[in-house]
Length: 156
Image (cartoon, rainbow, N blue to C red; front, side):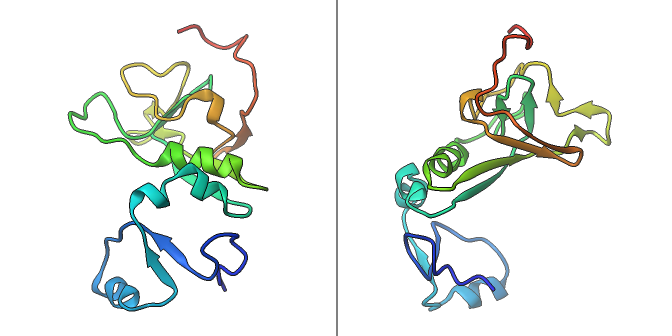
């Protein structure tokens, strides 16, 4: 059972800046004293995130290169995209005592015909710079890239 009692901030509360879902979700949220809504400036603030004990940021990437750069919110065919809070949560979790960040990524796309793990990101926006990436996990395993050198990696 999740109680949120030992978070270090907003103890006993689920904190969000928005919610989209079914009628059951809205019924659960309505007048629920265990749920608080705050502006994104608060929820996505790395200092707010870092104030939580053992914060784990679980984020989903669209592509990652061998240097550790992560693309998440834009691909070459997208004409409209927006900045996400991914980097806020990754940096906040890294500053949290006992915290960590994990980027989950499917290893392939297009039914296994295209790798999402590439030598170098091209024609896409880097959302998470390699210096901020800790763990990357796919269905084939997990690697800790934090502090690793790109000396023998690909050239841009």
